[in-house]
Image (cartoon, rainbow, N blue to C red; front, side):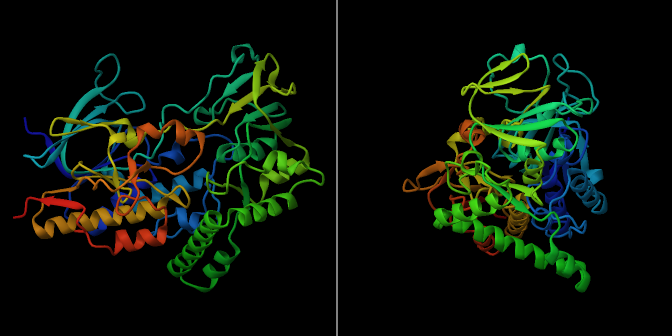
Length: 498
């Protein structure tokens, strides 16, 4: 029986997958494609997370798509607004009907003689839609083929977050919840809450919960950099009144790109200066006499980890009001009534929220093989942060870690369309980054010191020490490389000329 064949398979129907489908439909309209989504809904991260206050940690003028202006008015937006934006984009672009829900890709195998991927898909398994049962509830296995595979699965596991082992956790009499598994029946009104963590999720949870909780304590092992940004962009508000929507959106987008990149470059080149600026801003927003250096002076340089954004300083307002506080130290044990630190301090709690991070996962956990050879991602090297040496006709769509995710997504998807059209124009059926020469050093794919990044380093490809294998995390450089650079740059190998 002949398998269903598509020109392109997009894996994932989140922010990246819907963006990829738009680019493909606009720039490669003759290509057949489908989107395989393991869950039952469009939206990815913005549909998955339901914890109090969940919102963007980047401004929406750069997190939004380049081709569809963000017109909500909020620069830092709640998840519900972002989810509506993604779903409206899919509906208006005729993309929603291309999504096959409950389809989880488990394996993809490339055949050079056939110049195609054979893709094994589990239908109706955990997190999926309906379908026949296979292997004790895993779902029905179906098989498709495609000429090009585009993975838009993000970089973390959707089924489980990361929670370290906490001594004594079985003794705690209250409720323990992870933000990734938040349910509506978790009641914190008037209760004592301890939020363990200091990243983007923690600084979102604390002020949101403090509005109705008895008291919320953010318990951190070590501090993070926290930056206050306006919830509404005043320049954007003015421009929307005096200029067409597309023009205003483009101007604000570029303004915010420049601000973000300047902050990043200053942090890399003059970390002491950036540290002083951040400390001064933070101190201004905290109560007089607050131990700023204890709770808000990280041991690392700015942008060695991602900066945490709080809209209109809501975290600092919660602290000033007395409804929230910060404790810095290591956990000794959970007790029946809360958490005890190694310092001996006891933090009473009715609810403990473990905002302890993500469990990273590359390409949605699928396995890859090329001509019968299993591909181990940690042994491969990424080309321009999006393709893999020795792996044909595959691109991995990942966003920036030092700027808005979608900036890189748009560039990557635009490049893939350029590549597909170039192959059609020249009669190519296969494109693959060759192996880098021995002078190219091997570096971690993500150059961040965060614990969740270090824990998962062995699950991701490597990057190289120089172009085109280097992941520069620089939007302007990537524009030149991905949008205007030559497709046939010597590193890509093409075959099948007609």
